Length: 230
Ligand SMILES: O=C(O)CCC(=O)C(=O)O
Ligand SMILES: [Fe+2]
Figure 1 (tube, rainbow, N blue to C red):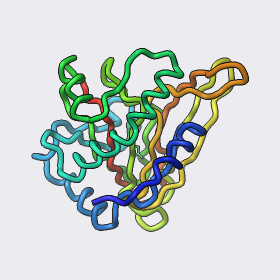
Figure 2: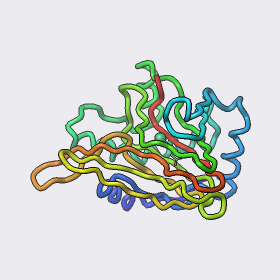
Figure 3: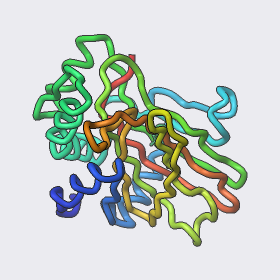
Figure 4: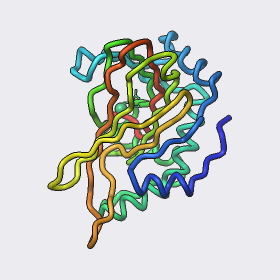
């Protein structure tokens, strides 16, 4: 259903820079089919018009349970590959929570704590739209990494609309990264904080992500967040 991924290389990159690209996670057909789900309201639990909340311009819908099979598959398999890294980050950050090996066990913890609403989402942007820098935190249970997959083709479907990450280091100025994605590529990135190695000890940096203004055309994304929402 999805390509083989070199998790050793991805993990090294995530440790080094806090984000990594999974090239061609989805095929062109999978992108088209996933984007087409947007038109079926019965698939979703909530529709958000971003301008009404000051989140930017554009819109998104959170999937309802049961998730579409591809989305459920990605959420389970990506979680299982990322959980060991999430645990190492928590150890280095001095955070007590450890993550179970399977997504089913993690989501059971979320549900027990009242975080029961599914968070995977489809986003849609048109010319002039943008997504303000933000963090996807929906309660005390936070899995420290998330994944966004670009469903449209830059240069053909849209121009502008770059995926942006910023990193705020303690007592230092913020650093920005522009993540180069093409259709079907996914970016894995830190939800909230990540450790970076200092000369004496690890430091905690705070990340935010967003999307620059779409200049022309139409851009769609599939977002996979591993914790559920309260
Ligand atoms: O459209 C994008 O690339 C950003 C999506 C996003 O904010 C998310 O998946 O959490
Ligand atoms: Fe987001």
